Amino acid sequence: MARKTYSEEFCRDAVDLYATTDGATVKQIASDLGITDATLSTWLKAAGVAVRGRTPKDPPEGSCGPESPAQELARLRREVADLKAAKDLLSTERDILRRAAKYFGRGDALVSRFQFVADNSAIFEVKRLCTAVEIKRSSYYAWKAGTPARAKRAASDAALAAKVRTIQDPKTGGDRAYGAPRVTHELNAGVPPEERVNHKRVARVMREHHLAGLRLRGKVRTTIPAPDDAVVPDQLNRDFTAKQINTRYVGDITYLPCGDGAGGTRFLYLATVIDLYSRRLVGWSIADHMRTSLVEDALNAAAHERGSLAGSVFHSDHGSVYCSADYARLCAELGVSRSMGRVGTSADNALAESFNATLKRETLAGEHTWPDTTTCRREVFKWILRYNNRRRHSACGYLSPTAYEHATAPSTTTSTTLAA
Image 1: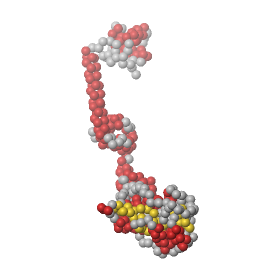
Image 2 (image 1 turned 90 degrees about the horizontal axis):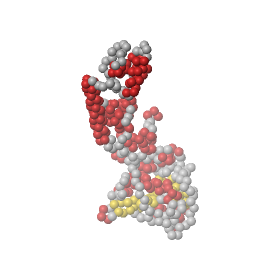
Image 3 (image 1 turned 120 degrees about the vertical axis):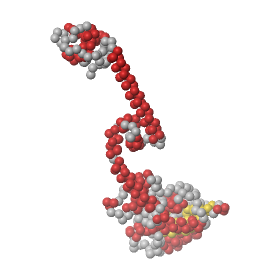
Image 4 (image 1 turned 60 degrees about the vertical axis):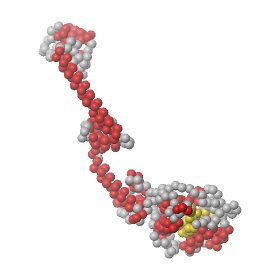
């Protein structure tokens, strides 16, 4: 490629080389020097050296000789045109960046850059847009080619989100506390394998459409250790499983806050007896006190439901009611062996604690209290029936506790199963 400017020394040496080389043509010498033959001819003419061959036209830009008025005018016009083009380019880029500043005000994801180019391609050149937002045109066109597929997937995701809302809607018999795992099993229940939906897709759609299950975190102390605790061993050691039905149980007491208007917040209390084999709530009792009769009623209800608890283990914390002599006497009468975790360690009775948290999270749905005690009893009772008979449990292969018992131990279940 020819150089645009040359030193005076280079020009003189080029002229001398041509003048002292016999038989050399302008084209040959210019080729050796890496310049155009027109430039060399101009230098020869300015030096007064006769040119052998054709007469060159006006000297090009970068010649050593003085410019004629016509050459100067042409050069200035070119420079003005170049400056105008540069100004137009800067003005275009400024307008693009102003639009981009508003467009990306809430974030700058790569897909948003592609969308920005698509939204503004009718106003600016795609080349300028891609340069301004620093993406490749080939990448943009590849993204644009995938628009129909993305639209199809978005429609499919919207349809899936509608199904999830139905599963979570209590008005249609759904459960608003269901998260992605339970929703996935609900969607795939009774569906042919080729039509089943992947749990990762369900989680993504629920996340994008803000359909997460209810969450509620709260902690209130309900375990009051008795000053004269009897020594009861821990027979579970945090192993909350059972190989057979009606062999190992856990239980606890949880508070149920009820707002009674001007009277302030009152509390009901729920005592539970949960079978570790199926996670089924076999016995429970609700009262406005935490006396020993509360846990006795729950254990008697479990004995009635199972027919007998003889030979089973019941695990609890060190609450005063579980350590009372009356409760110990009842366990002995029913043939139940007591088990207790360490004092002040909730993890030793984690399954019962988890059950209590789930119950309040899914029934209170973010509220702090139930309106009144009547509503509280009704909602908790309805939830227990749903939990036992319809709510899918991860520990039961996403069957309900009752369905799991009938599927795995039908001969040992009783006929007193509650209807949902």
